[in-house]
Image (cartoon, rainbow, N blue to C red):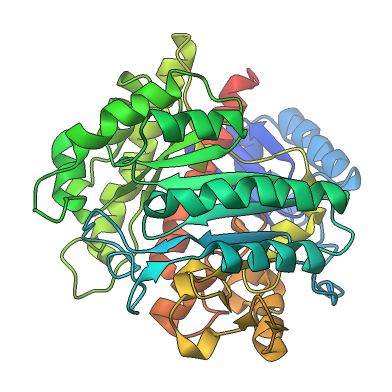
Amino acid sequence: MIHKFIFDGVRIVVDVHSGAVHVVDELVWDLLDLYQTAAGEEIMSALSPRYDRAEIEQALAEISALQQEGLLFTADPHQDNYRPRTDTVVKALCLHAAHDCNLRCKYCFAGQGQFGGPGGLMSAQIGRAAIDFLLEQSGPRKHIEIDFFGGEPLLNFQVIKELVPYGRQKARQAGKEIKYTLTTNGVLLNREVQQFLLDNQMAAVLSLDGRPAVHDAMRPAPSGRGSYALVLPHMQAYVQQEPAAGYYIRGTFTRHNLDFSQDVMHLAELGFRDISVEPVVGGSETDYAFRPEDLPLLLEEYEKLTRLLLARREAGQPINFFHFNIDLSGGPCLPKRLSGCGAGYEYLAVTPEGDLYPCHQFVGRPEFWLGHVTSGIQKPGIIEQFRQAHIYNKPRCRSCWAKFYCSGGCHANAQAFNNNLREPYEIGCRLAQKRFECAIYLQVKQAGLA
């Protein structure tokens, strides 16, 4: 399987199963359409009116050599024999420190932070039990992760301050290392919190959607007033300290700002360099969710963003845009390329009460309850459903050129839109495919191949 696309006149060919990327001329571009279906003389007859016969023969020889080297028209080495790991090794927890929030974001999948329940804060006792659960369930894995999440986790900062050193001590005793991340809307990101993150080498995900009007329209305070002016100084003050553990400015774009490339540029102009602006996911009843007719504009906007990022890089002001980060050197052999984020068996979410769910987007849905941090996994059948939701068990993914980059897409979106973990969300697929084309093009340009 190969995938061909043209970006600003550059002809790019991706060999799906080897991961090889080729920049080709017009002759090879045309040849590839005929190479596997036509004989040599048929190809000559079809192309000789446009190209010199000797050039065609040379190009055919080059294609044949690439095929023999396993860099073109490569067979899938895993399709008929891939089996996911059977042992349950939990590598990460999304720890819901708070089911409450001090903003009222309109696109919030968590019901304003309460996940359909009564709300509440995680106790230190439950938090410690969750860390103990992770250390026990991580098996021989040395590096494990905890993301403090919500709602707004900083509403429970006192407990977080207890849990971080507890986890480090327990991990050290077990010969492991915990990487901590905090996801916050920034309202409570004061000097004390900033110093705590810095002192404890904690990564941060900071929610900021872009231009003031865009952010304020979707992320108001309970009073209805926008939150941009409130959170921006906190985020800038923190990022200016160059946190060693890293950060991402994490925005969401909706149907109300289809020109989202301008929001990325706005964030860059504010001095942020690590940026993730992602498409909203919402039901058709909402006014902010994308519709099929929006796709042409969205795809065009990703191309605009690509050109803007390229221009900034050439001007010596590069941006690390999360969704354009792909690995072209690793090949398709890594399990993560086949199974994705590991939600439901390697990555779990923990509620303030200690209940376990496949990920933060499944929290509060009784049919996806897995167990409790004090008693362990009670529903191994659900674990197995997620384990088996890999690309070879998703009919649409098996024939998709981007399958090794997106790993089958988001399970929560598939379940929400199609009520089926194995049927990906179509709009999400189309956007992901375009992002990967943009990312590949940027790497081609960076390597000086075009």
